[in-house]
Image (tube, rainbow, N blue to C red; front, side, top):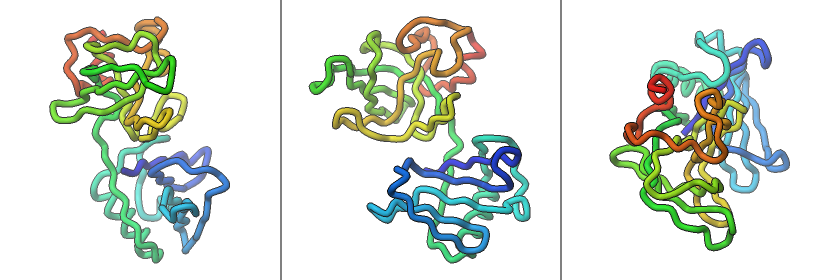
Length: 208
């Protein structure tokens, strides 16, 4: 899954694509024409692409994280391949901040404060998420940032691991979401049970 960012005023006419994080000392770059490819030298994986002078080809609406249509994605892939890179990017524009239902919550065996949850985020998707909030518990309705979510701080949520346990997202507080004006309590945001798993954050906020 790839994310696209654009900020002409701050960065210039560059469409920035990313599929994960990378340490500065692992970065290897290669440029052909207006396309720069960024790889992780430890495993040769492509983690980012920068497409310069993108407005010659595409009209990008928005600032920051942008949602590209399928037609725009096809154009982006055409530019990448025309530059000689054998890379295909795909975008998922589905909501990344959604209601989750905590179906299971157990203590992390290698931590005195982490819990391992199985959290349903749709009718057919359950994510394992490691959570450090003291108030996390089975049976709660919570707000989940799925992999690919961009937090108000600018941080991107990627799949990862905490203390050796896979974690596929983040269970959020109102403060982390910039929504302390709705409720300002410590720990994760315990939602009303009226919200079904998969309900978007936009719809939750509208109902408060």
